[in-house]
Length: 194
Image (cartoon, rainbow, N blue to C red):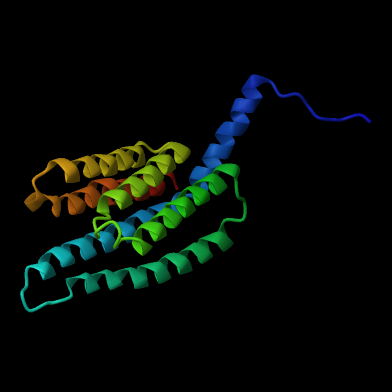
């Protein structure tokens, strides 16, 4: 039985890999939506919680986090529309999808067992978000996301070394530097490339 497979030259292999990366970058053209959506939701929830925690008449400041429900719905609807629009899926698209699914699994585990963590879950979530953001930056070769992931990791360290009265202010800064700025840079980069 003969095979008609063509042996590729190293240059041809590199061209195929580069085309796959470019296709993945094009498919992730609108991924800035997710960074901006979740960046703003988390920032609003975080700042709202900080403010509401200081108002003595509010006994359940954590209810501000119900803001994630419309975010989940928007995320799902947008993802479905993008899935229909992007017909061609590359291996890197699947890797990035699984990257963020692993984040969601880890996040769900942390949320379910947060009582056992004495409700100190932010460092764990930042590690997960940092990993997923960093890897997305690597996959699409976008340095601001790589740096965004590193910012999340530095945020974890700061939460352990800063005096307790400053720890709550780490999260908003990390969200701005780790999600929002890279998200806007990705959005502007994509507009420039379009």
